[in-house]
Image (cartoon, rainbow, N blue to C red):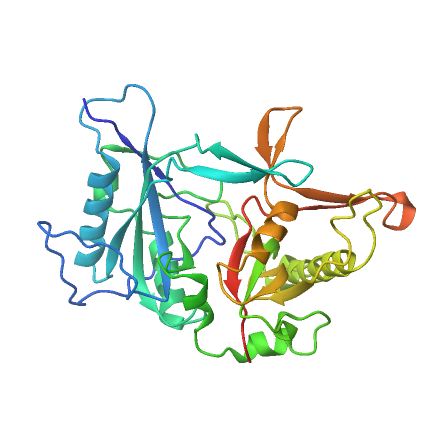
Length: 344
């Protein structure tokens, strides 16, 4: 008995009209061939769907994740859209975590779940018109290969199996490769002159420890897409994200940590604003193997919480930080990552 593939469609932003833009395109679509994602694709692509197997028994005749992904790739290619398979399986290697005293501890990664994704298109940047039109078209597509042998449960705002498609960088590209993209005037405008801007970092690499995101919304099938004015009513979340990132950088560079160790005081923190998020980074390093990275990981990396017996992201709180006695609290990335420092 096969294990039936379960298809996950992720993060639909708006419901849109179908747009068949690929009629007549000529893309190789040989069912006997495999089309695997490589570093040469992109740099921007569309995450079409992710497949994984359900636990327990499944109905006879279900498709495996690999079969479902392969069939979807072929069908998209027949429609003229270059599509590829990307397989991800978390390793069972031991990962470094840190206790509340900053001591490193090696723990085995037990949360493993193999997934197979279908990623399509090759676009120079996220604002590319063809990329945006293709994304709209994909969200409304109901591929024949996904109508039998897979499980998909529609949810509000995600009526179809591909309604959650979204634009993403090629996942095989490293942070350094992504940082070498063409200079973006908008990013220069957003970050030029900003207090503690990452442009001020003199190193080649830095460590991302927190992310703040902009606004998104799910629209149910049949509902009208909100206009710009109502969508941003109450403030632009990207502005709020930028302010939150700036606030955290100020806190880390100050002396708000009154504990005996004072780990979160006088930290070399920087802010970077992108099209969809604002991030806070710490440190300036000469290479991804710089030994100083380990010191920051001991502060901002995941920690073993003895009360619940599991690894949790690090956090920092300042009592009575805001007006009215509201506490300030910041949750750091579950796994901080090294990124190349952008240059103007």
